[in-house]
Length: 197
Image 1 (cartoon, rainbow, N blue to C red):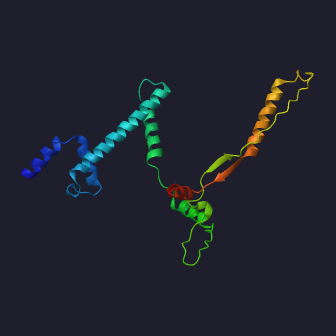
Image 2 (image 1 turned 120 degrees about the vertical axis):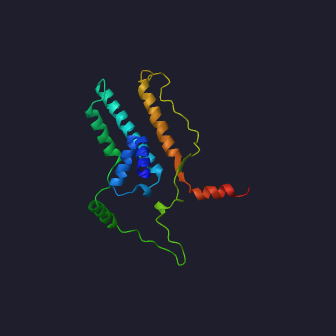
């Protein structure tokens, strides 16, 4: 008798939400001695955090709609957005099997391994392959610009914008002709840096 009275007094001192969590655990077949007391507090924290997130989202939706306060539609929309983005279900097994069979139809590349060697993937898939390029300009030979104007000044009336466009296109062509791309693997650069000088 005294044990039951003590439990009743303890249950009355507990917050109502903690009693609800314990009752939920009991309804799922988990007895009171089968979990640690902090489990109830963790479920309460999870529930409070979820409610705060939903209500803050509902407030944002109400503000966006120009409403003075939150209404049930805002709460429904907030809950639906939480369900859609937080608690996503994995795709059905049939979809995963279909995707796997389509992916597995593509054969793996053949590996050519020297006797006693380690099989390596193709060159493009190796991590130590060249992964950057340098643009190295060639040395430009001095070019003499020809003056297209006659000595008597007959071309002074030419369009200055046309001349500017021609200069830009000529500069661009010479830059393309004088530069080349060079790739270096990272391992070669690291080995060169380690060599004593």
